[in-house]
Structure formats: structure tokens, C-alpha cells
Image 1 (cartoon, rainbow, N blue to C red):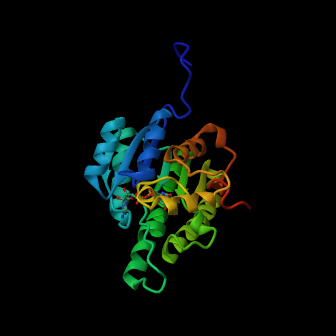
Image 2 (cartoon, rainbow, N blue to C red):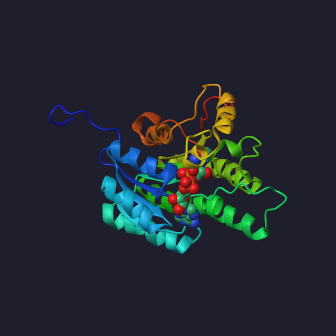
Image 3 (tube, rainbow, N blue to C red):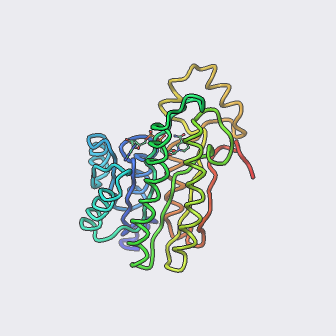
Length: 250
Ligand SMILES: NC(=O)c1ccc[n+]([C@@H]2O[C@H](COP(=O)([O-])OP(=O)(O)OC[C@H]3O[C@@H](n4cnc5c(N)ncnc54)[C@H](O)[C@@H]3O)[C@@H](O)[C@H]2O)c1
């Protein structure tokens, strides 16, 4: 502690967040910055991520997570800029709600390429860097759709998010001896622009199915990521943290 000011939980830490141009990724980047971290924000939509980065004094990077070579170069750019990356957040995703009867092979492949293969690249690229340093935190954004059947999102999305839980456990086991933790977050029923655009009657019906009686907030997802990245979560790895207002209890 200096000047009597309380130490922030992530001060001195560097975070890299994919899909940080909008939605939960932007909220997570803001939350990590508020917790004291310096943040690299990567997204396929460069102008969007530049706007969020300038708001929090972060580093904006253009990135398509489907391309492993580009991903490695982008991550390397963040390491060159900040000196290291301590916290990796694999958040970028595509969330179509196409009926399983209508999903084309191209759409299936693209959703898996972004949501699952992209996160695999993110875990592996960050994992190599963190393994060498002997410390690090990786957080993967899964979903309740990967734990339970849901008609709100497509089966390709659900499969990618279930796969991400398996990926999280495998990387957690592989990296545990090197001081790196890997955990997943499984949100659901989070308030979003898409939700706000729904008819009020539909929103009320959805809300009635949430035991806590309300939708979650993007800031609450960000707070869970900050926790998983903080010293307080040092003994947690390979875990899935549910954040769903009680919709799914196990
Ligand atoms: N919002 C929710 O209620 C909710 C619930 C459960 C899980 N999640 C998960 O949280 C994460 C964020 O969700 P969201 O609702 O904010 O999504 P979103 O669609 O609002 O944002 C996704 C971001 O990823 C970026 N992106 C897409 N393809 C990319 C690519 N190939 N390379 C790099 N960036 C790419 C987009 O440009 C966008 O900025 C996702 O992994 C999602 O599955 C969200």
C-alpha cells in the first residue's frame, strides 16, 4: 500500500481480452481496468474496440481469432507493448439462434471456428507465454447453453460452449504444474441490447423463470472475471463458475 490508498486487486497486472469491442467483452475490459489492470482489447471490429480502448486507456488490436498466426502476432504485440500478459480472457464469439434444421455446414464450421477453435488458440498462445513465466490466469467465456438444452441459441453454439468446458479442464490440468489457472464462466440471462429489444411480455416471461427474479448485468460478469483473475481465486482451476440467477443449479 502507498499513500494510505488501498491496493487494487489487479494493479500491476496485464490483461488481454478478445471480443472486447462490445457487450460482455467491453464490460470485462472496463472491469479489469477498474480493478487496476492494464488491458489489451482485441476484436475483429477495430473501430469498435478502439472506442472502448480509448475510454479506459487500453491498447486496441484488430484480431480474427479464427487465424492462429494472426492471433499469435496480435498477442505478441500486446506482450511487446506491456512486457507480458498475466490474464487472458477468451470471450469472442458468434451467437446465432438458427434452428438445428436450418444450420448449413458453413455456419456450423464458422461458429465452431470462432467460439471453440479460436478459444483453443487463445488458451494455447497465452498458455505457452504463461508456462514460461510460471504464472498466469486464463478465463474462458462459456455459457449455460453448454450445460443444458436451450432453444434460445443454436445447437452449434451450445456444442461450442460445451466443448469449451472440456477445453478448460484439459488446459487447467496441463498448466497447473506451471502456476497457471484456467477456469470457465457460464453466464445466462444477462441483460443485453438483444434482450432489451424483445417485447415486454416476452421479457417478463423470461424473468419469471429466473429464481433471483431479475436479469444479470454485464458488470456482474465482469466482476466474476476480476475475481477469477485475482489473488483470491489462486486455488481454483478447471472450474466452471455459474452466473445465471439460479436458472441452473447443480
Ligand atoms: N450476453 C449473454 O447473455 C451471454 C450469455 C452466456 C454466454 N455469453 C458469452 O459471453 C461472450 C460475450 O457475449 P456477448 O453477448 O457480449 O457477445 P457479442 O456478440 O455482443 O460480442 C461478441 C464480440 O466478439 C467479436 N467477434 C466476433 N467474431 C470475432 C472473431 N472472429 N475474432 C475476434 N472477435 C470476434 C464481435 O465483434 C463482438 O465485439 C461470448 O463468448 C458469449 O458466448 C454471453
